[in-house]
Structures are given as C-alpha cells and as structure tokens.
Length: 237
Image 1 (cartoon, rainbow, N blue to C red):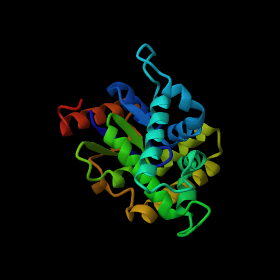
Image 2 (image 1 turned 30 degrees about the vertical axis):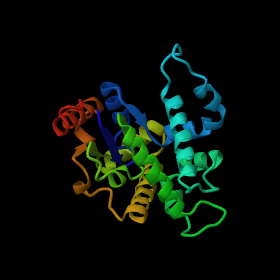
Image 3 (image 1 turned 120 degrees about the vertical axis):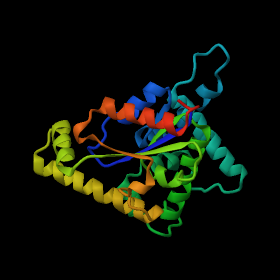
Image 4 (image 1 turned 90 degrees about the vertical axis):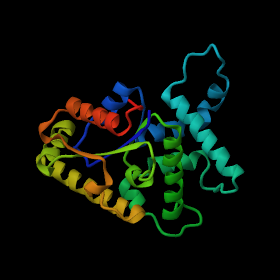
C-alpha cells in the first residue's frame, strides 16, 4: 500500500491524517500513539507474545509494542544498544516535544543528546516505513524518508489567522493566547527541522503535494491525499 508522511503546523490539519488512514486501511502513527505504545511495552510484552492463531487480530498498539520489542532486540544484536535506550527511555524519547528535542545538548553521557535522539528517531521512522501501510505524522518524516521509493509526502498548511482561530475555538483560549501557542509551536517545529535535518519544513520542494485547508474541508483534503497516492503509486491504493 505504501507510506504517507504528513507535515503541518499547529491548527492546520486536525484529523486529516486519521481520516486518510481509515479510508485506506493504514495504521496511523503520531507521537502520542508511539508514546503510548512505548509506555505499554513492558506491560504488554507477555500479552503480545501469548497470542495464538485463534486470537483476534492485534490492535495497533499491540503491533507497535511488538515493533518496539523487535527494534530494541535488533539494536542489541547489532551491537548498537544504548544504555539510555531501554524501555523507559524509549517512552521518554517518543514523548519528547519539538521544542525539547531542539534544545537537547550536543553531548551528554547520562541523558539524551541530540545525536542519540536523531539516531533513534531516524531508526524508528525508517523501520516503520519498511513495514509499510502507515500514515506517519511529523517528526521529520519528509526528510528521513525522502528517498523512500513508496512514500507520499504531504504538507498541510493554512494562514496563521485561520490556525489561531481554530486553536482558540478548540482549546477555548482568548485570541492572544491562541496566537502565542501557534507562534511558539511554529518556532519549535522550525528549530527542530533545522537542527536535525537542515531543512525548512515549509519548503514545498520537500513534498509531493501541499494542501491549504483554509477553504477546504478535512474530508476533501483527505480525498486529495488518497487521489495523490493513487497517482503516484497506482498499485498501492
């Protein structure tokens, strides 16, 4: 089926990625989903391992728990296991925000450093894409998977005034506070992408399509993405 990466600023896209994943039968993976799976890794390990042929199909969380188990085991077998990359630290890494990641130190012996973060997030994204059938939200997917042969890269955008209004309505904030949230988020995302990938995430050359949602519904934006995937990879959708 292929892989879709979606990049966008706060207030630009809402539920578009989830709509696309549902229509195409793909897994939907964002930082919240990855963090939940990493948190459940230790708890769910025996449950996932005990499944038999008569069990119902595994849930997305169970599949991601299994994915993280394999990821950590392969890292250890390859001799690149990091003492900071145990189960608990994997949860911390997945929960790291754009701003926190952009502020990571270059060198750290006992805590997460920027090089360890980049290596880990790159490995996770690359292995998720290798499994296929997934919509990946943010975290530099458009840069990490730039050369992936079966990947559609999409940017969702909208004018800042529109995004501020949406955040104000969604979170019940005064317009001034909503603007502050949006501007802070925009800066964190820009710093993150520049630090780790030397790109401006707003550069249209990084994407197959750019969709402005200021005058188009989320349902229609999702339909455009589905059509784009079919055009780029006719056998995939």
